Length: 181
Image (tube, rainbow, N blue to C red):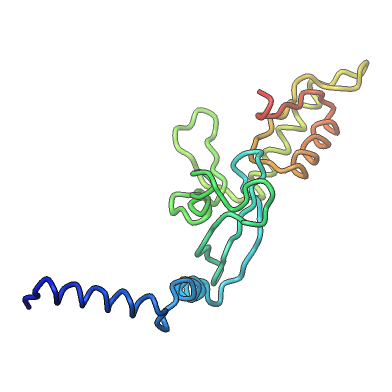
């Protein structure tokens, strides 16, 4: 197809005129429909990003117990809809095929990790804490200096509160948090 200069200008002007009259196509509606199709039958959960102590709001979309979309919460006062790279990659924490889902135990002198049940792991940890506490307890001051707790910036306020209560209940004053280290 060959066009003269005059035909090209006529075709361009008529195309611009037709497009500017607002054909039945509206880009904003098309984007909204595409977004809704992607999230159809998904349950929306507002949540908080756990990577740092910033407390950014996120919205999770879950379908069939699988995370299908993650985005910043535009109504959250901390991040106003934006996410850092760690927050944007948060979906990999749950859906990563390399994620370890069961506790592993390496016996003293052993070279290989062995899978054990949650009950066995909790029992081993509880027995070790009790042994250390009982053997190092100082009756004159009612405490032990052999137990301590190091928190993480990924913990929320409620988890930090429970952990602080736990270490004090165990009789130790050594409670530290990564955000202050």
